[in-house]
Amino acid sequence: MMLQETRAERQRAMRALLQHPLLRAAGPFADEFGLIRRHREWLTDWLNRYPGWRLQIESEFARLRKTPGDITDSTRPAVEPKEEIPFTRRRYALYAWRWPPLNARTGRRRWAAWPKISRASSLPILSCKRRISVSIS
Image (cartoon, rainbow, N blue to C red; front, side, top):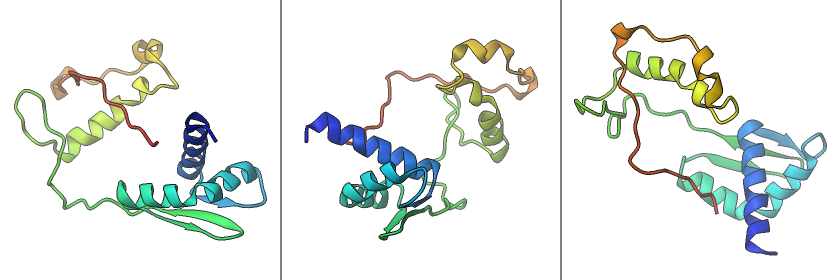
């Protein structure tokens, strides 16, 4: 199997697990279930290593058990670019509310139609100096 095919299969299996954490062998995602079984070792290792989740694969189903984040963990908070101050819970909530228009599905064209946050909130504009990508190969 070529590297690109393997990568595409892993991406398809990972997306299926993330969208549907409980997949049955018989059903609308039978093809994806087969991919999950085929790449079981890689998926289990990757999910355990990076997000710390457990993947359970049986003959009849595959289940992704996500571990909730620790809200008391303050080791790597998001920070405001200028002041270098960690985000408050309110600031996280405002960004979560503001972010959906930038989603790849909606595209930037819908940004103008999204309700504006009041200027009183004074949220800084996010900027990246380099493009960040995540590879699951």
